[in-house]
Image (cartoon, rainbow, N blue to C red; front, side, top):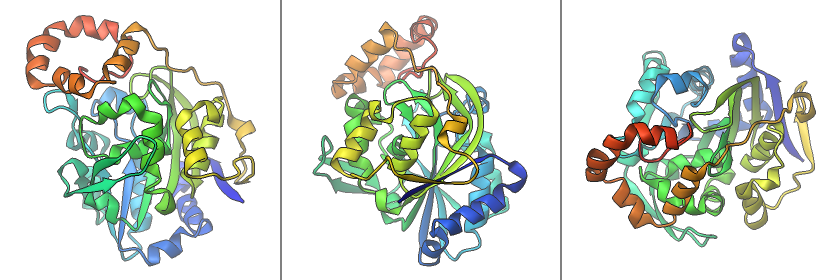
Length: 335
């Protein structure tokens, strides 16, 4: 029986809840035999306004997890990759600074590794789309991955939750080139990690509409726990009022790699989906977003458009118009 725990978020008792759920799912036993544990939060922006709107994983969950892991004899590392280009893109150090994650190093013993700068290992796939991708060695060496996604809408992947959050393990800052086949690529990628990942769902402040950055905050005040990413995202979609199998990467992953009975999920805690589900506003794809989608089908064009020369000499001078055209939704070439 697949299991999922769902609670109202309680900041005063978050440490005890996390400790209890780690024991319930048997993660404490895994930690006793783990040498390397990585934490994968969702760190999509380095702009304070969007962080405050709930675009990134809540630092209170990150701190509580680090505190719990500090009681075990394992190396703990927060991982993420860079996004975008050097001129315009989310800078990991800045995001962690704004969120207060770096200050936590004064209290706890953990490392932060930017997978873009990590040792790169070529991984071969026999997947729907992926054939060969360079991955950071740290993510491949991990004995356990603590995946802490946000619950948000997304203009390319419909929703972003635990399966989509793992996309940030691809070290290439221009992984936007993979968005043209994002659903099948997520299915392929997550097959690497499904057996060693535990999910803590951050549904405290969620996001609807033009996610994953510029959407509207939705205060759900929820936290979930699950030892299966597919089960987690199935429940996450239902909480958002979305048919899980209309989210194509959920459908593909279930059909090709992880065929489990999603209609048989045992709930722990006082809450079930029907107690909390609301209808999230989906991302609206205007003409500009649809043009972006078509451009992303050609990686050489994407790399040309993202080159420093084009950014400095073209997009910079068009920035006001582009800001209006993108309709407030996440944009891969200029913020």
